[in-house]
Length: 180
Ligand SMILES: [Zn+2]
Image (cartoon, rainbow, N blue to C red; front, side):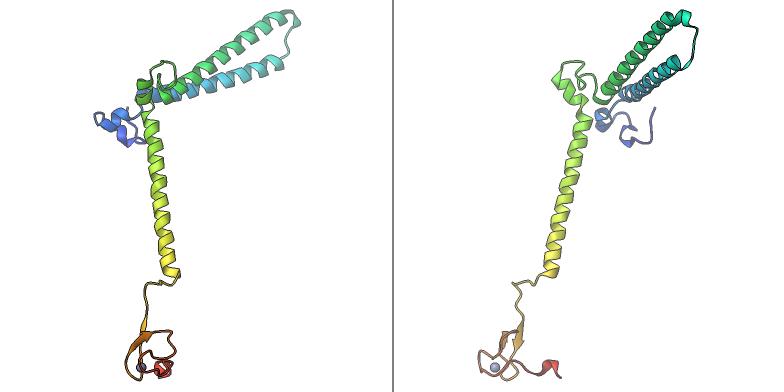
């Protein structure tokens, strides 16, 4: 079965598909959730109905035994469900059912890749932030490396724009071009 939510696993033979989580594990994962839900629901319903329904007092011992047996079944079901979900999520070795670090590594590879991808995303984000910071600094702060020169109205010598007097002829630089 191919589902649209996992486009990587759509073609069965690409290396990406083999490193993705297998359908068996997906089935275990969601099946485990279902069993867990049934276990919890069954346990609660058993408690509610056993406590709630008034019964003849003759069979109270048998009733208690049935209730305990049902509760135990539901707890076992819940435990199996939790285990299935864990194995489905992390694989047999990844979940620690089989002690095999090499296999655990391949079992957990999709999650490792997810972590690596998330880290790479975060780094991209950080780089982008750095660029934005630079751009803001460039836009707001005056760039000290650029010096604007102004031509002296008397002799034509180039001087700094904030010079009060010309460095060549000592005439005042504060003249006209704004009043023109
Ligand atoms: Zn001058």
